[in-house]
Length: 114
Length: 112
Image (cartoon, rainbow over all chains, first blue to last red; front, side):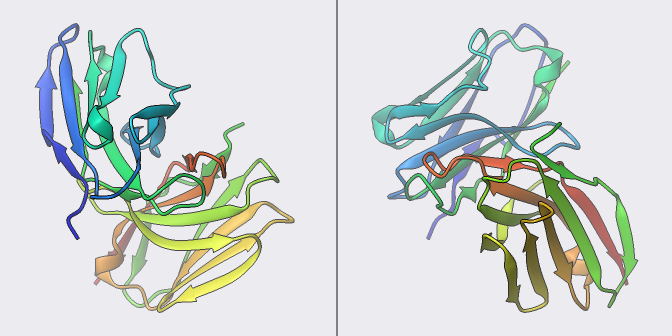
């Protein structure tokens, strides 16, 4: 079974620039999550999709972050404009459904904002 | 107060030692608890998954939940250098949505 694919793995940008991350979940997984992991901290949920609908985006900074899940499969997370404090690893995860399901994480996209 | 608290370490032990990793949580309603292992520059991978109180064993790993004290533990027996990683405890914040709440993570180094 192929895992969760993410790209790019690394990205360096200047503050106020924009960046986009892409995620392809495990085939058949209806639920997709984007987590932000700042260095030395645990992952924090940014947004959760069930198929192509948003389940939870309460911690997404909506003035600069946006995310979509096209046709209930792939997802993109965009940051515009980026701030220094956005430097982090952006982890995508997927699961079969909601509730007490096992999450499978991708390797993450590491963003450095200068 | 954070919902899940974990000592970040780092923790350094010799090969073969017994390792104890711990977390506390604040909400007595939490029922599901997990331990994830994260190697450097990799995503977290599920190690152990427990429901409510009690112990669960899987090879060299034992997960323990004490709901009366809101305490979660992971024990690693006969630790190996390949166990060197960051260990994240997590709880299911919402059984409806599947949202996980993570601790800060404890960095473990097992020296040969």
